[in-house]
Image (cartoon, rainbow, N blue to C red; front, side, top):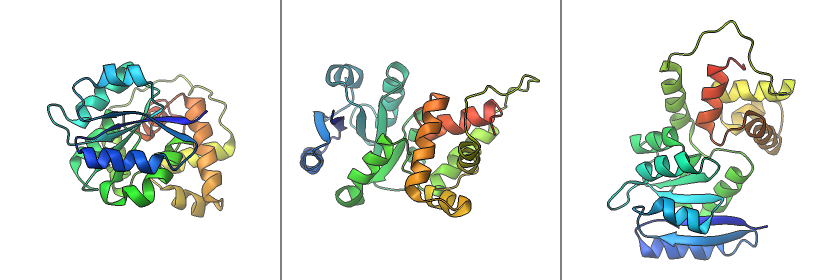
Length: 215
């Protein structure tokens, strides 16, 4: 079945351009296109997307607020933020709210399809600088101290190595270089980690790994 995608952007030209680009992929289907997020939960419920492309700056209510609403009710939906500035604090806030990654608007034509595919296979497209900010925030959260052993999620030894690299803020390429494995192998391991930990974003992976002492 094709991957169902919904677009939220107040710029009609951008929405139409994204839709045309996505329609070139036979495995993608655009199921919704919206100019605001004031009715985001209703819109998403009706069109049932697998992936949402969300602009951060939206009229009436921001994309960040929309992410919080959507993820609270529909935690399995993957959300990719669109932004103009990579190191904007809004990007960081979006990831912490539950978004799985982001893409710069300047690179929509060249990198959007790959970014969506990365999401589909368990990845989280984001720069190391944003990932580090997320990690720093997670490390500041008091962790529950317990003598109970960490839950057994049936992670393989290699998956635990990859997870440790993720917790340390390494990018996919850096993980591959450190563990001497290919990029696609890293993606495959991370997809399995997401499935076994029952999480949907990089933030959740790091938080769960640190909170439960998995690595």
